[in-house]
Image (cartoon, rainbow, N blue to C red; front, side):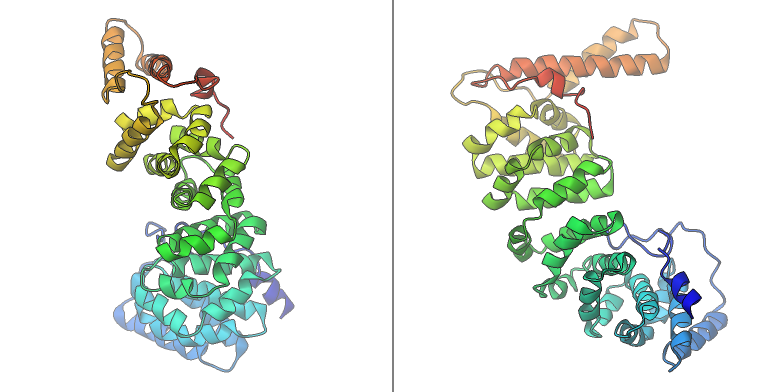
Length: 397
């Protein structure tokens, strides 16, 4: 029995369950073809009988089989909907092996299945999952955080998950002290909950921004985690408490500017949205910190190369950052397009290999943008220091 427990507590691989943004399974994962209708019915019937048995070992074996079969199959998630009750009962067992097997099976059952999510919560799963969030066993805590991530991805269950007053503080605690994977899942879950607007104040009250920023600094700027962290920051800085917390952190605004420069299009949209929310909240208080971190070139670039929402936010932010007392014409929206077009015409006259031409073009666009930015910034009452050195040459963490 000891060897079984040790085996069950090994950290599950990423292919064992979905663990990205809460409800996006890798449907391209290679798996065995589904059996025939009669064959699958036989497997389901036998597994359901085992999970409802009185033998703890049979229950664990059945839970693991359910996890395996529902990993990538929406059909099996439906066929095993009647396993939810017995699996939730296993969460209340005193055996960690039983807890983990049931938790992972429930996690896979909930993926892309709102009916199963609702059934899991109705069966009383939240209480034991909350207890697992406080576990000293890092793997159990990881699994519980992943389960909450999936359960919070549905608009149906999100208000129910939010109704527990302890979940948000516990998630922030995991974000602060958990394993690397648990921190990512905790941040993703907080993002899911933040889309239910009444949760923003409770999230702010736990003072999560230092921990969100620490995670943001450690992530690849193009990752999904960065996107969700940037979106969460954008929501939180809609409140003065969030704006003050961000600027109080060393490199807090800079971290957002780095996402603006190097993130995915969606991440950059959220980053510029966060800076815009700060300016709209108190232009005279937060304009200087934004300018000081060299945000203008990234904002300018986004007016041309962003998503539709990103472009609109960037243009609005540029207007707010300008000093209206200085009668200087506003920066034209097609500035970057003009720069690029002129440089391409200039380089077409030169004979260079394709890659060399692309590299040179990128460098020339960057320099031209920086020069344009410096001209644009002359309309401000003070020049932000080191604009040229911060854009494109800043060392990204």
